[in-house]
Amino acid sequence: MKVKAIRCVALAAVLAPAIGVQAELPPLIPLETFFGNPDKASPKISPDGKRLAYIAPDKGVLNVWLRTVGKNDDRVITKDRDRGIRHYFWAQNNQQVIYIQDKGGDENWHVYAVNFDTGQERDLTPFDGVQARVLAVDPKFPNEILVGINNRDVQLHDVHRVNLLTGKLTLEAKNDQGFVSWLADHQFKIRGAVKFNPTGGSTLLVRDNPDSAWRTLIEWGPQDALSSNPTGFTPDGKGLYIISSAGANTSELREIDLASGKEKTLASDPMYDVTGIFEHPIKHTIQAVSFLKERKEWTVLDPSIRADFAAIQGIRRGDFSIINRDHADRTWLIYFDTDDGPVRYYAYDRNTKKGTFLFTNRKQLEGLTLAKMEPIQFKARDGLTLHGYLTTPPGIPAKNLPMVLNVHGGPWARDKWGYDGVAQWLANRGYAVLQINFRGSSGYGKDFLNAANREWGGKMHDDLIDGVEWAVGKGIADRKRIAIFGGSYGGYATLVGLTFTPEVFACGVDIVGPSNLITLMQTIPPYWKPIEPIFWDRVGHPVKDAEFLTSRSPLFRVDQITKPLLIAQGKNDPRVKVSESLQIVAAMKKAGKPVEYVEYPDEGHGFRKPENRLDFYAKADKFLARHLGGRCEN
Image (tube, rainbow, N blue to C red):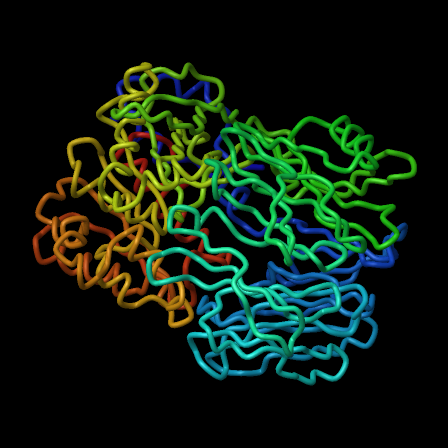
């Protein structure tokens, strides 16, 4: 792997007094290695266990490939020539693969079925300007799936039964109550649904059969709405498995009886939410749950798989996840995530308790010197304990380094341990990388989640600044060379950083970040209308709280910006409209403020096409080198 001479290193020598340590950094890794298409990814075993599908490039675009288990007869079975396929699954009939695709990042997903023997491909939801969501599949109904489609009312998804062989659509359930999610029982009938209430709470409704009236089973208040939801029916159909934080701080796995409403807890942790469920695809029993702590941890509920989980953990180091399995429950496909190497995929045989290596997602990462990701924790200024991760450049001391504060999106999401392409890119360039699960991040219980209510640009930002102070106080970061970087909410945090606390950061990189919280909520996608109460409760109401939201919007503090800013935006973004970036860019230019702006006409909320990703990261590479003093690719 060779890289041309790097002129940016000479620039770094001017900007960074301690740049002599650059000689000890490992060789510069090309951006293509981090941000180009993966070699192979997302393998899935067919229900009969005879075939393996996976995603890999075909003529530079990600498509679905197929091989017969035990043979080397790999062939591509889809023909996407634009955005690339990322989400697919096996039809239960063993004849078709189902995938979703949108146009230019507009998130109006279509559902496609391709027969890998005949090559026939069918658009199952052929409606313009309409979004489809796959809701359910079931082995007992191999030639059908349930799909939510908002073709009747753009704000609401009705449930349709789709025949995979003929393409016939049959209305299964009309959404006349503002439901945001649906649940099918094991007879493939819609018997559960969730809707949000005007106060920001949610209601779980059930019915005995499709002809029965809906009745309320659970009312979750605003404090529990984001940390509680149903996951599926129990095997006998008389109960539901739910994730619920009602009466507790953390989200627990519970079983609730539909007749009596009585709940029993199946799995919980005093500090961390249940974040993953491993369910038997035929028996519909929950066999294990995972908790995202500093690392992923599994709790086995079904003794029959305890030996399997122990054997899998012994295959190699890293945190494992199970992708899918065949109906015979003999072969499981699994992957291991590590912080300093590519994702590694295995086929695990339950009979032999052995794993067979399949491939890694990025072969070029193998053998490279990558950085370690260390879990950290510190106290916020109000005493709240915050967790996060620190990645520092390999080969040099973690002392007085330029640092990038990389803020996750959501904000009701979180950073986790494992391979992170952005963190590895930045560490390879010579930067420390700080990722903070600020208040409002998910997985740490509802008290932590709800501590962020109405704190966009407030205590949520204070947490980020407290993290910077922690890194500076530990001697890790050079106070004068700190950047803030992020996408979506992380982009908003970047704009807040440069307008609310301009003295802290040397520069900022905003990817699809909102600049005005009022216009953000006024332009949400129409199918987000049913979840508006969440924003009103947790962020603020665009009318009633207009003055407050204005005070938390970076657009109205452009005069405070003193440091360089790079903004990147997808023109077709349905979540954070292009106007969010255009209005702050225009305001900055009018005020004579430093800003670089790049817009991708064929992207949405993030950059999926490799040519766009590489173009953006090349710009960010040089931008950070200019203002922090690290290395960059020429």
